[in-house]
Length: 457
Image (tube, rainbow, N blue to C red; front, top):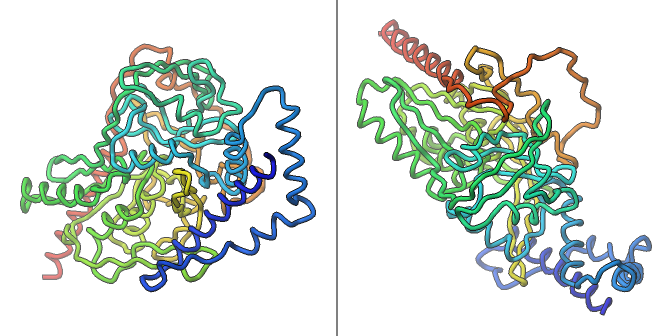
């Protein structure tokens, strides 16, 4: 039995490696040829420190002496999860159920609470709540730490297991215990819903077009942004002064959609993004292949600590090509590339294979995008909202490109912010200060452009 499990484990691992290599190197002429497994991985199992006999011995001990019976399937999944999670926070083994749910998310519709989460130190942390979802409406914030779900402690669970508990039939309720920086653990009960992500919304703010991009997980994000610009042009005509692209708290999504949106505002030949990995053969540079549909109108991109991945690719592309001003606060810093590779058992391997770089060659990973103009969000009384405690990519255990030195503690005392306390009365509605400042910036840019042109004439 143990030898069979070990053999099955090797089969899954080696088949994944073969699929990975095939996926990255295959051409139309060699689609029927899958290369042999990587020698370095094959040699791993013949190393004295962890040979097949030791692996078998450990399995035998577990099967015979563990306090409860355990299935081969559970042991195999645990081994795969452990191996991949040891690499970085974004590599993972997806069992058939998790892979199916991931596929549903990229279609823009799934059941749950509507938030992007990750696992950190055996607990679930929120990267970003998604607009118009139960999580967003309940006041869940980027950086919140979920310590228990329906009174079941998160510690000891895998991320897949925690997500399974968060999801459920629309209309059913889930009880969360949440720890927020500087606050005691508090409870929130949320009703699950069918999450139909509205990737893009737009409206006119005076003579300025405002386009909110909530996610890049929708395969139509680029098409919707193009539709937004066309609609705003039709509505405002020659009065249109500029555009605001709001990707605050946008956790990212599909690389193709980030490229598609960036392509709309650049001119042919300008670089959008590049990727670099261990294998030079898979390094790539992506360039714009159309013309700027905004026709040179001023653009401001709003970002914050919840802007990640595809959002950062867009911001970096427009910033480095001097096509837009980036405003807000530093982005999340998720600049690594994952490929999702189906396995023969119906699951999939999500593996980090490269890093993203902006057109000027800057790595996004663990560094994020620094805004050209820093605008801190504020609450009703113009109190600064401190974002230094947001979780960023660099804070993850095992994150790529992070330094090991200890961060200095901030000794500056901060006033209690009642708007963060869930036990307080209903929050006072406040204006979006960052958006107000962005509108002012666009107006200033429009005036400068207008009078600059008049002076040259």
